[in-house]
Length: 203
Ligand code: MN
Image 1 (cartoon, rainbow, N blue to C red):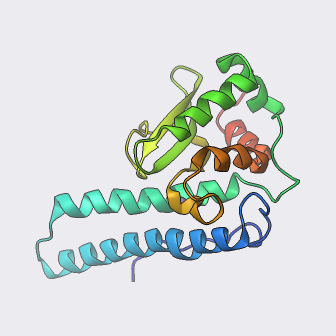
Image 2: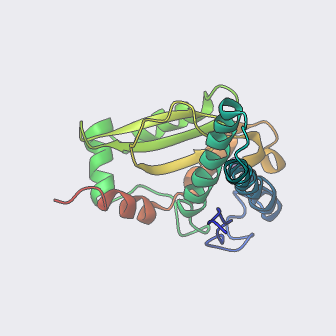
């Protein structure tokens, strides 16, 4: 059988992000929502495999739209888990190459944090804010992603993402996206962001 997507292990325990993200919030987000995108993507892949094998048609337009949504969800959630660190091990102001680059491109870390937070706060409907890097312009560029797949820049690697679907915070924060984001900054795993950035810049 052809390879399918797999729900990856979380890099920490369910209570590792408390008090900023509760055990129950993290468990449901991972076990129900992230798993739902993995299962959703796999179902579509299998449906297409079967249709191709049997020479049957399928609704290409509807399928590809759903596939993009589900694969986007799977990939973004995987990045999101890894760009958070257990409470006490994340947050603060980044050093390293990424710290320097943020200051170079945004003027200050504070300015970057405010712009990224505003991008996340003002996503229309459900979505993400993502810090990306453009090799062509040698710039960090923020993406305001709607759903899991709209407004992404083609082929720009993602360095940092925050999930602002309500399912990411409603158990802990109800509809208070701003409060969730304020607390989320305490969890950012800057070592991981630095690793992602360092792989892209060779000098
Ligand atoms: Mn999510």
